[in-house]
Length: 145
Length: 304
Image 1 (cartoon, rainbow over the protein chains, first blue to last red):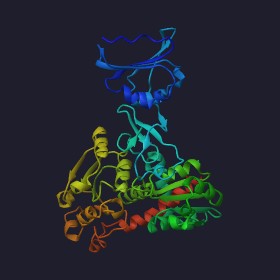
Image 2 (image 1 turned 180 degrees about the vertical axis):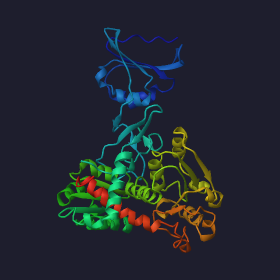
Image 3 (image 1 turned 90 degrees about the vertical axis):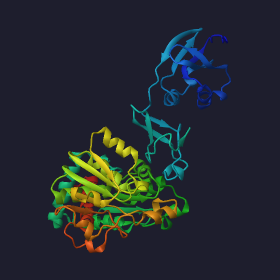
Image 4 (image 1 turned 180 degrees about the horizontal axis):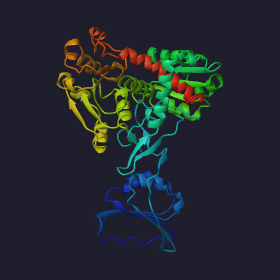
């Protein structure tokens, strides 16, 4: 089994659905950070069978937890200091997300007024459904990251 | 400040108060003839809609107020590229209340967020048309004496018809309503609506032929197949004449059934039906004025 060393300062995103780590890497804009990032794919997991892990050696404050929660709120966020886990962040679905998803409904006012923020509102917590605040289009149908 | 974007913005109790006020206006319009003296309504219509705009203007004029505005985007500063946000800020300086229609969904909400005056959504694309729903509810409540305890058939374009979606969402808040959706397969009511009805335990059925359910209905809500909602002309031409209500179909209906239609009709209701006492769609247009009068008074805080 491949061995990736532990990090001293930063955070570890654990229990990522297998195959999703690269997507998350891009959504969190980790490619823009000048720090060490380890992407571990298809690691063995008792709970999930297979999982991905991201280890990032930078301050947790650079991480947009809202985006992460919308992508998959089952991901575990471990905050690391001096090589030890000092905190576990719980991901909660945000009530509103601003400029994360883009409404692609061609009939939405946001399609013609460029300065408007793209706001999605949590319409159904149980089913994890977000809708555009303006046209109520469901996220996923015609919205993109 | 209160706006109206969606018919569900008002609770059932608030709607009851609004409809009571509308019925008081209906009984004694003279009493309200000067209720809005000195007030101005701006009708900002970015797409043509003679009926809704005239209804709003008639409502304000009946209340003694004045109206100003534009009736299509070409004659407004939108043609020069002005945003809705900027337009409403300017309109807020000129008027006390605004009714806005826009082809883009959510435009009136953008306006409401930046407005200094109450904004009424007078229709935003295929999204919402709350004052039509209030009109429908007031018509049913006034002529049936109640909201609830009936079987309603909704016929025609149930896929793109925003008036139908809004009406269903508004009616599910009342008890004991059974829905019958009458449409061709291509224009069926969207899944999210039938899912919502199932989740809430509200009974409904879907049929293709109007004749299959006519005797069951207490209310029949007819709709037009709207050309502007189709991207493809061929589909529109194929489906536009799918349902035509005529005297022979109506003969199977209950004596006290009501036929409603948001208007304008094209040919989905034969003119021979117009004289039938069950045809109440022109009365419905009159109730549209009363409910808009009540709404203006309520949003301006003059009477509730």
